[in-house]
Each structure stands twice: as structure tokens, then as C-alpha cells.
Amino acid sequence: MEPNEISKRQRELFVRKSARVAASYLKRAKALSKVPDAAMPFFDVLEKIYIKMEDIPKAKDKKSVGTLCVMVPTELIYAAGAVPVRLCSGSYTAYSIGDDYIPRDACPLVKAVMGLGEMKTLPVFDNCSLLVAPVTCDCKKKLAGAIGSVKNTVPLHISPLKKDDADTEVFLKELYRLIPILEKETGVQITARSLAEAVNMVGNAQYELSEFLTYRKHDPALTSGTQVLLIMNAYSYMPVDLWAAQMHKLNQEMESRLKQKDFVSRKNQPRILVTGSPIAFPNIKIPLLIEEMGGVFAADETCMGERGIYDPVSVIDPSFDGMMRALASRYTKPCTCPVFVDNSQRIYRIRQMIKEHKIQGVIYHVLRGCLVYDYEYQLMEEAMGEMDIPIIRVESDYNEEDVEQLRIRIEAFIELIKLKELKREA
Image (cartoon, rainbow, N blue to C red):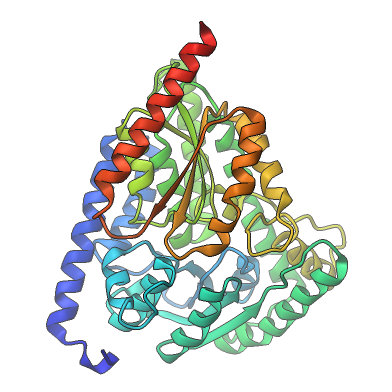
């Protein structure tokens, strides 16, 4: 199907179906437990983007720059006077359209992004004046070329190595190459002052997240993990200062819930960590099934979750080059994405999270066609075996045909954890 063959009727059907699916998932997420009042603005943002089909909240004079991975330094985009928008979508409807342009066995996330580009019905995508696409896995590499037919796209080379300073230099050169492109697009020069302000602004959001994670670790849980994931997803579509300010209010509400012992789970409910391929709204069926089947979605190690904004930039040298080097280090060295050759940090991080969040089981999520994450499952299985933590591999797509099969497997996994805990107590 050629782009010009997509009729007005097809676009209308696309919008209706896409909005209906997103509304259904959002409704189910809200029904899991009482939504914190301070979390509603995050839900409202997702509703405006995917159901009402509105653009991101921003000043009219500001441009938006789309990104296709958490390895794009958002600080540079803010320093250029624009607002970053992460376009990694979980839309099944867009995925279905993208299936006509992307090979059958490719990642559904890549298909969804391509589908959004071809349909031209989602303002948050269409209004981006530029896309920055890190060349990570093979699918993202080819997407950077394919999506260029519908949107001005800048590929960003990511070195497969990150251990040595020479590896960081490779990414640093890419960031310096990106600067004049952003400046030309926005008409704003990136200065040491604007970059420092952007680093501080993003750092404030990271601080609020770190405060929130102390509440998320609490057992029993203070709020639904699926709702937490939606809050993390909303970060993709909100200016960082607005997101941080709302997170501050949410932290205050979590403190109030803690004092009043207003919990949303019981002490003996299985606490589960989800890791693996990204879980992007509206495709939140795995978290929903965990909590609808009686588990607690207690933590996630995914790039659409807390990993995307977990590590702050550590600036030692406040000069422009010093800040640029700090950015290059922050977006590569702590990153636990499996696109890197050596990814032992990821095992260490998950071990750490299991202890901090009192995790009793791990669900390893693999999007069909996502080979880099699938490749690492065996390593994860061995590490969990050493810790005596049950783990299950769950392969899925964006369609809903596998929901009942997933429901059975996840429910059985939760019962396994319960049985294991009963034996341990006995």
C-alpha cells in the first residue's frame, strides 16, 4: 500500500479504533485501585494524546522534536528551545498499518511508529518538526531510514561498546553533530547557560522520581504498578518541568497514604518485577494481567518505565564541553539496554531491584521480533536461579489474540509464587 492510497475513510476508521482501544486500556488501569488524585493529570495527558488526538501541552512558539529511544539526550533538545516527545508507541492499530511497510518479523514497536507516520492522524507525531533516531538494534536502524520518507529524521550512531572512554568519545561526536541540526531547526543557539538550565530541569524530574521510588518500594503497595507505568509513559508527552511539578504533588500524596496506611495490596500478595522489551501505552496488557490476576506489579526494569529517567547527569566540569561529556557518559555507561556488547550491569541492577522492592518473581517480557532482549533471557534465567527467584519468559505482540493464553500463564506463575512462599513459611 502506497501512502497516497490511504483514504480519508481509512484514517477515520483508524482514529476511531485507536481511540477505542486506548480508552479501554486506560479504563481498566484506573479500575485496578483508587487512582491518586495527583496522578490524574498524567492519565489526562495519555487520554489527550491517544483518545482525543491532541498535541502535547506546550507553548505555541515552541517546536517539538520526536525521539525514538531513551538514548537521545533530552537536555540538548530543551537547550535548543524545543520540547522532546518520545514516539515509541504501543498502538495496535498503528502496528497493523505499519505491517504493510515493515517486514513481517520486525518488532511491533517499529511497525507502530511507521504506521503513525503513514497515517498522519496523531498530532503528537505529525507536529514534530524533526525526529532523532538512535541506531541501536537492526530494526531501529532500518526504521531510521524508512521513517525518513514521512518525516525529517536524524540517525544517531550508538557504539556497541561503552566501557572505555574511547567508546564515550564516539557518542560525544554524535552529540556535537546533532547540535547544529537542532539549532537550525529551532533557530535557537545552544549555549553553556541554556544547557546547564536544561540539565538542572531534567535533574529535578529525576530527583522527584527517586523520591517516588521510595514509596513504590513499600510493601504493601501504596499504588497500582500499572498506574505507575502510565505515569512513567506520560513523561514522554509532557514538558519535563510540568511532569516534575506533578510528581512532587504525587509524592506528597504518597506520604499521606503511607501515614494513613492507605494501601492497595495485601502483605502476602506476590510482588513481581517486569523486565525486557519496552511496554508502551496503549499496549499495557502484561501489567494489567499481573494485577488483575492478583499479583503486585512492584517494579519494572524497562526503558519506558523508570530506567528512562533513572540516572541523573553528573557534571564535574561546568564548561560546555564538560557538560557535553557528562551527557555522553550518562546516556551510555549506566544504560542497561542489551544493544551493548557487555550488558552485565543489567543483571547487577535487577539483582539490586529484587532486594530493594522485595521481589518474589520476574516476568521477562519479549516483544515478538525483539531479538536483543530475547538473546539475554538465558543469562537472566541463570541469575534468577542463583537467587532462587522464579522467572517466566512471556513473548507477546500488540494484538489481543494471545490475551487468554497470557492470562493463563501469568495466573499460573502467580500461583507458583504463592505456593513457593507457603512452603518457605512452613
